[in-house]
Image (cartoon, rainbow, N blue to C red; front, side, top):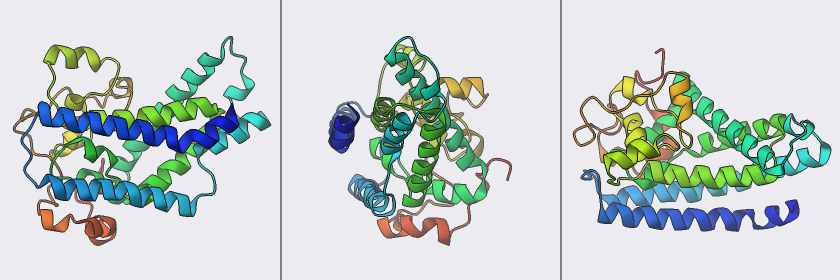
Length: 276
């Protein structure tokens, strides 16, 4: 089972990623929530180009990934969940997914809390519009650090390889979904955000207003923001009139692919890190 997962993991992840991206792109055309203010072709080239750069960067630098660590931990009996008796295998898988989701929430909040880490993460927030490709707009160094954090959590918690694979697929899918420039009925959104982070919930996090940027950190499960007091229901200006992005990056000409790569090293982080 583990060897099968390991050999097919890239194909499984890419298949789900491509399918969800295509679905969200079609939804954005048929029922857009907001009018876009910057050229979509330029943004999609930068955001999807960053996916290719991130993937190559990880492949070149890391000999192992989170799923490899999970397989090694299971074989060696390392980690908390590998030493806890479960009445059913699916309980271990679900527990592992929840632990990883909490870890990603805490990681996200930390990248907003520390100015040095915010320098990397602000590239994600520099997008002047908000659509499904914003969900994959991350600096390679942030992706590298995130993978290291996930590997440590997987090892210490003893999360199963199947749990890691399902979580990675869910994380990619929900990131594409909750960054979608899509319209849905308010009643549907209210019900959905009880179980998953919705675009209406996460869009608040991309507001230019600092107190709104530092809220709604969840990517997949919406519960952590309510538990830790970082939940904000809606932006003060409303979803149609709110301004997306960061106050120090308003010129699209400064947001080309190359400039995004050097952005953390060439610009001040502003007042967005929590506590600054």
